[in-house]
Amino acid sequence: MVKLDIVGTVTESYKGAWSHFADMVKLVWAPVIVYIAANVMHSLSVQQSTTDVDPADLEAVFQASWGWQAAIVTLLGLFLWPIIAVAWHRFVLLGETSSSALYFKFGRREARFMLTSIFLSLLMVPGILIMVVGAGTEFATFAVPIGLVLMVAGLVYALRLSLLLPAVATDAAVDAQMILDATQGNVVRIFAAHFLNILALLIVAIVVSILIGVVALVMGPVIGIIGGAVLGIFAQIISVAILSIMYRDLVLSRQAPAPSSDTGLH
Image 1 (tube, helix red, strand yellow):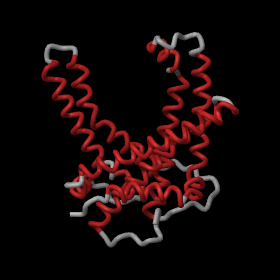
Image 2 (cartoon, one colour; image 1 turned 90 degrees about the horizontal axis):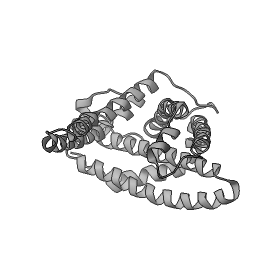
Image 3 (spheres, one colour; image 1 turned 180 degrees about the horizontal axis):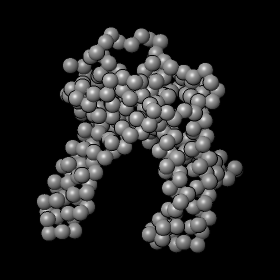
Image 4 (tube, one colour; image 1 turned 45 degrees about the horizontal axis):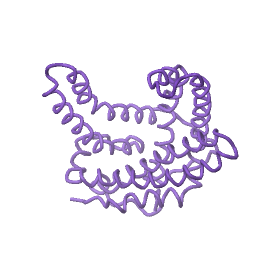
């Protein structure tokens, strides 16, 4: 059984993003610009609509913040993210780049990626529903722990089956059982790699937030909005790289010889 290299996986994803920064920008700049522009317009709209709302009244703030603009940004992100993720998965695993200066493609591959992502996010829903619905009933004593167990189980399977996403992105065989077999015995290591990534992202976020805060004092709050959106995209791209490396080391290594060194982050 192949054991996932926790530190090596996270380190390679960050080193790859740094050393291939130009490739990353070329592949994702167009959808990222659209996403940032939408976030800036939405944030400015929220600031205007919440001017006269008491910040302590969370319900009023939420009602004022959520509207058709928020729905549009959410839907836009839902369609833009597969474009970014698929492009980076294919770069990491296949070494594929685009000869075009404008890479903005949402086709069958991106649609399958989006649907697979939605499916994975639904694995925790049964546990959450049991906890929420059962919490206010006489069966709360049983519903809450059962719901919690189901939610944790859903999270475990979602993390393991998330290796389906690189398969979808690279047009490889999409076999859930094969993914479960490949991740068997590596569940704790997969959790640990994601947890280590979260810690690293927290450090990056703290440093970037300080820099953004200083710049925002001079150039205005819009810089903070842009910086936050870029940081969010960066965190997601790193997560994509981690999934690609896990897929390469745990799944592809069982099927064929290791990929040549000219692919992706090497």
